[in-house]
Structure formats: structure tokens, C-alpha cells
Image (cartoon, rainbow, N blue to C red; front, top):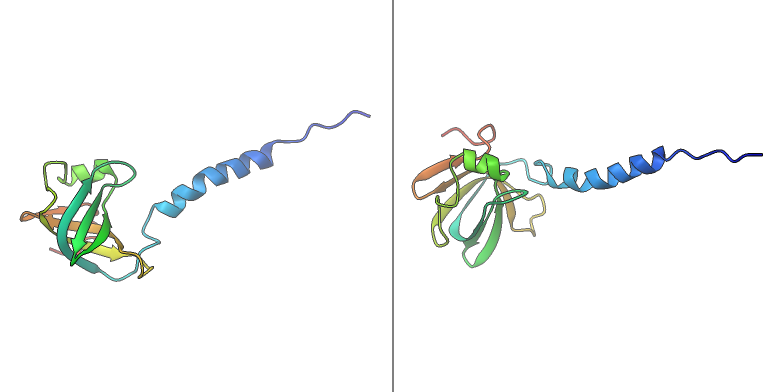
Amino acid sequence: MPRRARSGAPFVVLGIALLVAPALAHHGWSWTDDGQFRLEGTINDIYIGNPHATLDVDVEGAIWRVELAPPSRTIAAGFDEDAADPGDEVVAIGNRSRDESERRMKAARIIVNGATYDVYPGRAPPA
């Protein structure tokens, strides 16, 4: 009796799920707290690259990771490599991590050198 070929569909679905799950876990705001959060400090490092632009901000000796939007959106908001330097004072407004032991937030707005950058305008508080 001939053997029937098995369908590879379950393995394809599993493979796609394994590839997509990390992206879904990383993106979005689900890891953030609901309330607005304001962070003030000094820029320690700036990264404008994928998957998100980030600032490392020194707040009284503790480094916070401030996630911005993806690079194209961050640059479209006017924040690029020339907008700030390490040592500049920054105000970040957005939502902090739900995990309070983690020094991490996602910013909707940052203010540096007198300029305001709304990287997520729909989430930024009224000016």
C-alpha cells in the first residue's frame, strides 16, 4: 500500500509564528504603563537606527533607556543626528515600562535644546 505524503502546512504555520512572535512582543506599547511619565536628565548616548531610535539618559546617576519611534518616523519628526549631543539636557514624555525595576520608557515627545519633537504625535500630550 502506498504511503500518503504528509502536508507540511502545520510546520509552515509554526515557522511563521516563531518568526512573528518576537516582533509582536517588541513592537507597540503593550509593555508600557498607562499613565503619562516625564523623565528629565542628561543625554548619555544617542542611537538613530533600527528597530527604534533610542536615547540613554542619565537621571541622577542612573541610566534610563528612552525608546523613540523607528528611525524614519523619528527623523520625520525633526530629530536626527544633528538635533542633540551627549551632555544635552532632555525631557522625555511618554510611558514608562510596566516593570518598575526596569529603567525604560517609550517617549511620545522629547524636548532638547528648546526644540520639541513629537515622534508619536497622537500620543503626545497637548502642547
